[in-house]
Length: 233
Image (cartoon, rainbow, N blue to C red; front, top):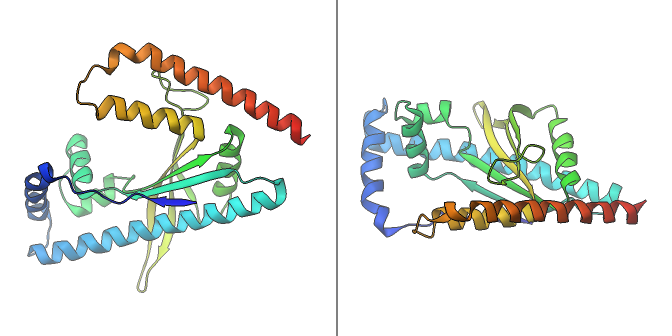
């Protein structure tokens, strides 16, 4: 099951986004904002195509795995294209020039896919099958499952490139893939909501409790996976 997250318009950010577009288009080499909008649309279309390409690959692998191993490793997939405001803010943090060309060069998570799997070993199985494909090139890999972050966050992060075949050219486009189990996704989603969306800024005092929750979920996952292995053998 593939879930696409719709971009939301936040009224308090409208003025900020208007200023963003003005600044961004001033930094481009185009003569006017119309050509900049066209370039932006073309850029987003390429990243959307790359995201769809990875989604198709994952869907095929999931179906094949179900036939050969009698279960689907992927519970669901979420995908999103990073918003222009988010891209702009990340470029500011990186200290790079504010242009569409610079965004393409420096920002590698414009297209993002979250793959939520049923068990930990399903994550590595899907990763192995995906990276074996000749048109998938691994750029970076960060394994926060074998080595979790200090706060308890667990996930496997990959950035890969795949070719996008357009009518007149072929582009190698990066896609960020986050691979988690259901329990990892549950913890990460709630931790993110508490940390960034409650407006109180007092989550730090609960860091040890959140870490305990992450460790408890990880222990439970290991037990459930061992039960599944014993049942299947």
